Length: 112
Length: 115
Image (cartoon, rainbow over all chains, first blue to last red; front, side, top):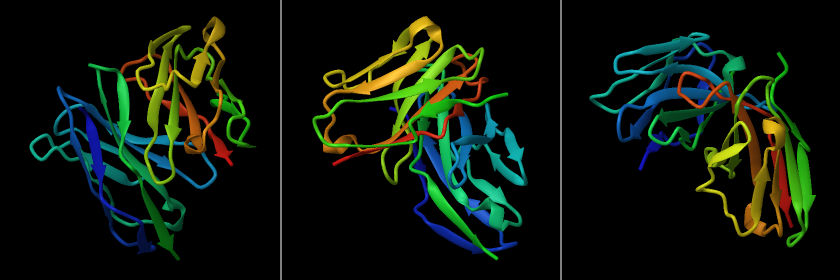
């Protein structure tokens, strides 16, 4: 079945540090890949997505590249801000079952 | 546009009691999802509706959980009777349609505590 594996957290960084959050997946077919973010007290919201191999999704300074050869979709940001503190979820979607499968999520805390 | 609205935000009940959650999706969104998120885990799909039809309820524990989406708009999710292990956040989401090109919009969720 489909699954998403995220690196263990939590992650604590200082402001302006470089961020990488790892995500790998297992899926049948050709999934679309997503990063969702949940800010404190808010609902999940889409951060970025990529629908085919080698696509790069980007938003709010975050980027992730769909790597089919390594089945990965790592999230990166060159300089994090305190306002980026949130829980980040990697997810995949396949047309076979029209279902969004999430990873466990990782909590990011950014210190001033 | 107004987002997905869920109520209540919090609910505390004793085990064996019934509980119901309500969701109002974004206007015009045909697809509605109910997810359950256990502490420290990602959301897991319980049921998906296309309009008023439940097209995927394979993960819904049907012995105690039920859901409905009358008229293809609002939806309710019910648990009867609740068990301690049902404590979780119940998320509702909607999208224009069921494909990958229609991003899901989530509500803030209902946090259920069963004592």
